[in-house]
Length: 252
Image (cartoon, rainbow, N blue to C red; front, side, top):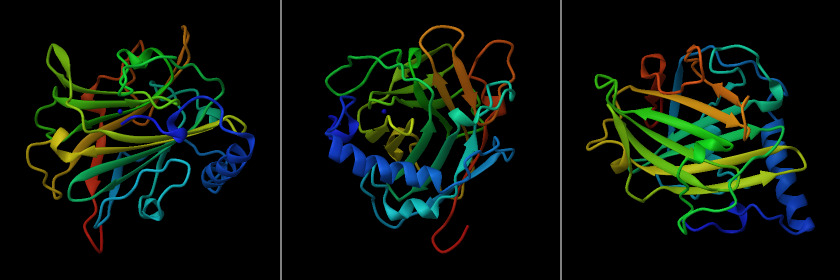
């Protein structure tokens, strides 16, 4: 979760640039049904790309069309769907990189005003974020990676293990675009496979889950692709993670 450029900064763009970029971002999200029910499927397929792609949240690369999205808008218990907060997630992969794209509707924005020079922000989950929990080795249920990105481009990347967590080394790339007029924000992440696994095997099936948080003070909104169904909001429930499968070149 690279220093931010214009598209990853929270301050308002010029009115002309905001209109042009905002219309493109809005149209990409609006081309899908206006109200998506939460995805009932538990599997997401990552589309294959034979080359590295450039991250551009406001102008998504054509390759993203190869990745069918999952969508969710219900809370962590699988209840209270809210189409004004629907989230879509697409995944691509190359030989070196796992790519994630979040497309998020929101009601209000709550972001931190400051971060480390790299954009990293500890406790980023205390404000609005989109999150990906990735588990390359499902047999090691308590071990997985956590990646978060905020609407203003801040990020955090964590190694989760029994009894604790640790920062992952740098290498994450990102691009974020905020369209305040249409109440949408999009984020693209490029995660080197070396941050995820010692040896990537595209025939392996990973476990994964995706989340959103919105709000600054409780009661906050906690959304999940695969509901954890805990009494209180808790995303760290790997036994409910869905499946992440990698499409091969020329097929699924």
